[in-house]
Amino acid sequence: MSNANLIVSDIQGLEVSSGLISLYELEWSSSTTLYFHPGVSSEVRVAAISGTQITLNVAQTIASGVTLTFSGYTDAGVATTQQTTASANVDNSTTLNVASATNLKVGMTVTGVGISSTNFAPIVFDGNTYYAMPLELSNFDIKSEGAMSRPRLLIANIESILRDTSLFQNADDGGTDGISGFKADDLVGKRFIQRQTLEKYLTIDPSTVSTKAVVELPKRTYIIDRIKTKTSSVINFELASPADLEEIKVPHRSVIGKYCPWEYQGLGYTTPMGACTWPTGGNVTIQVKESGTLTSTTYNLYFTENDEPILWWGLVHDTDGSVKSGFTYADSTQYPKGRVLALSDGSGGYTYWRANILISSSNTADPSPSNSEWQQCRLWKPWHVSSSFSVHATHSERNDYVAHPCSSVSSSTDTTFTLDSSATIYRAKVASTGKTPGPNSEFWTRGDNCGKLLSSCKSRFHAIIGSGSGKSTVPVNETDSAAGALPFGGFPGSRKHR
Image 1: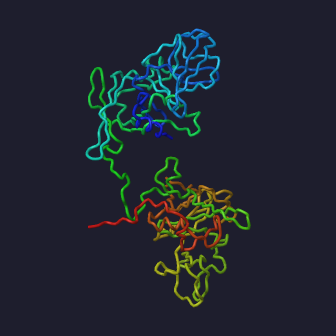
Image 2: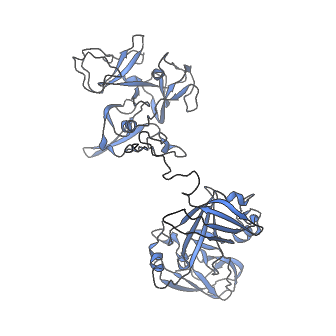
């Protein structure tokens, strides 16, 4: 976190008592950032402190017993000076042992007999060490209208300076390797950051500040867009704002009113895609406090892309495959809301339906897609390597559905198995035995899918449980709009105007 308040107060004063320092960061890769300064500081500074051993930013030769003066500022910006003596000789080394390091801080300047300054000493700021580099950043400004400015970055045309074979690397950073085979063209597309602070705030070590704040002006971030010119002595890079690159639109996401563009369950991916937070295994844990005791219940919710619930086969069938008593639909029979029933299709198979309301005993209208009193469902079984799974002759949505992975499965009709936390519902594409379901399988495709509509989001995040828990969960058709905000990636309030 940056703390700009102190530096803003300084700059707004009648006189600025400390020089402005510019530091630069180059994001070479997701794991490597290079730190530079343009050779602006000639001060010898404290780079690190360990007990009474101090590391300086440049090698020195100092005699034992010499009194050294350390100058800097407190966290509140108040000037402070501390003195101590060298407790051992130092011969062209950055390591210095002192009698006492009490009240000394990283970033303090050091003066005394034997201390020699240089314009190319490293600078420590925000826990990072910035090395001197011949560069210049210019031609940048902030405009409220018109084209965005494109700053110019000039660096010396010495590509070898950043290579792992560079003497500059080995001399200036303690032997840290540079970049193998570095070429100036490799910088195009990299992120370049300018950080600015007053010289006196280089003293503040964020590791010792309770707020972990550094005092600096807002960062300026650019993308190295192209090499504008290149001579034998200098390379001129043109920088661009991240929002000013070709093919980049603001807002970056397309405004789609009806559909959600985010990847279903994408936030849980190893590399997150979108902001859909629905868990990979469809398992939602709800905590309820009853009689002073907090209890947790896990529900497994799965739906097709048409928002049809996918429920466990064992809710309706016995282990021998027959329909449980009372779970076959019949006219003129009362059924409670949420009851799941099997309806004969007249060809030896069944379709499955959930009652959306209390079905009266006078009812004679069979469940169907056009009957709002019923919702069609799909049933899944646990996948087992020895079980056979089939497909429907004419309707692929009636192919077999399985859950995978599951634990302790003896057969697909087993009732004592356990759903793994990452279990996913798959639908058969072709009949198979022993073919493991997976995202790249030729035999299976995802069965639990989002329909990308607002109703698909509501059926999951605003679900109301009718009965059961875990694998036996049965949601009802209503949703609870008070359950919280929906992570819907579309813009349902937008519509096209002519």
